[in-house]
Length: 171
Image (cartoon, rainbow, N blue to C red; front, side):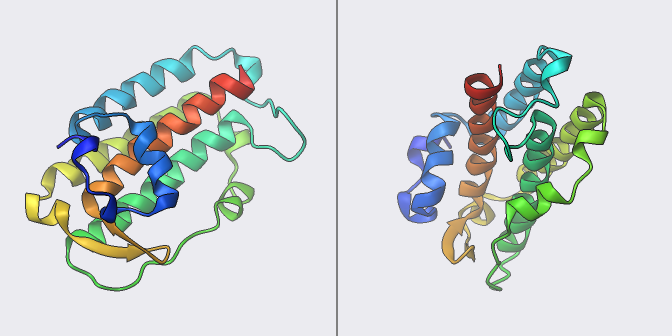
């Protein structure tokens, strides 16, 4: 399934931005491709840019990489629960609390990329394990209806969104 085949009632207006950022791609294939693209992209960033903030109070590139990792873990957890037909309403999360409480800027970039790769491999295995019925299953996260398959595309789009931010504001 490609992004343009995803019904709009399977995700919120807020997440439409990430669905669009994913592009018209096949989910499993793109989860793998954009993993490698992101690692190559980050490895080409000059070392002096990883701790750079383009304005006071803004996140560093290391902060954003940790944010991508944390967010993917949360979205994968949501996908797992919804796929297993857990009808519990899943709460939102405050991304700033997460960034404020990491040590991303004390870590080296290779460790962050290794963690990102491990999380993505786990996400890939999880999404490959889902049946078509599980992928279509709907739940509620952050007070909005969402499908498991929409979450997969959101993970892709979230990563691509931040990669674009790197290009526009950091490099």
